[in-house]
Amino acid sequence: MLVNLKEILALAEERKCAFGSFNTPNLECITAVISAAEKLNVPVMIMHAELHEDVAPLEKIGPVMVQAAKAAKVPVCVHLDHCETLDYMAKAMELGFTGVMYDGSVLPYEENLANTKKAVAMAKNYSCGVEAELGALASREGGMETNVGGPVYTDPDEAVTFCRATGIDALAPSFGTAHGIYKSKPVLDLDRVKVIAEKTGLPLVMHGGSGVSLEDYRTGIRNGLRKINYYSYMSKAGVNAVKALLGKEDVTFFHDLAMTAQNAMEADAEKAMRVFAGL
Image 1 (cartoon, helix red, strand yellow):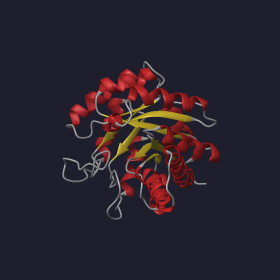
Image 2 (cartoon, helix red, strand yellow; image 1 turned 90 degrees about the horizontal axis):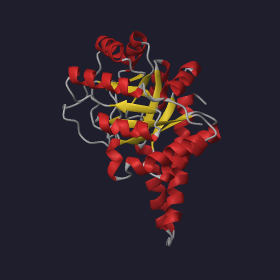
Image 3 (cartoon, one colour; image 1 turned 135 degrees about the vertical axis):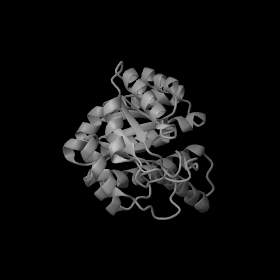
């Protein structure tokens, strides 16, 4: 069942939980995530990041994602993750995406504000919710080093001004997470999450959700996180399963590797969804 970002976040708020939002750059990822969500009977978000354009072009993977969401037995939002250009965002909405994340976090504040306003205005022509980012994580999407020299934590008062001025549906604040595989345990400012959630009244999003401790997940959710982005560790689980299979036997067919990876990613996604939804 295809739903939009506002609808799925409203369900999370009603249940006082978070739902997982998973990057799905290929069919195996899409199938793994939706299968796990259907098994648990929980809503879920599948995402395409602009970063993955060379892995799976939006025009090719987008329609597959939308069709998979429509056929799913649970509510599924098809979300555009870390979109840095409004033209690219427009393409996703034309394809039927029901959520978009405009990322102007590395731009000067006023430019991020202006572009986010444009994104919200564009989305009103579609059944599409808008997420934006304020502050900057210690690494960019894909684990790339950011050009700000480290995390820039979101100021709660600035967040209030930004959210009111733009009319966004969800905010991704910076509070200590990072994209990619963590090299050490992240130290998160979860009190900041609570203050921002209370001041803005909006559902908040955790980027860099892979590798966070169970305790931090639970505290973050209590403090207002309603969407948790998760990909790196799920993807790594698929890689590890393929390595293990190749270490045991001589595999002839690629589809055997693909299915092995898919099954491992489904199991990893299921574990994450259980934590996020409080199951």
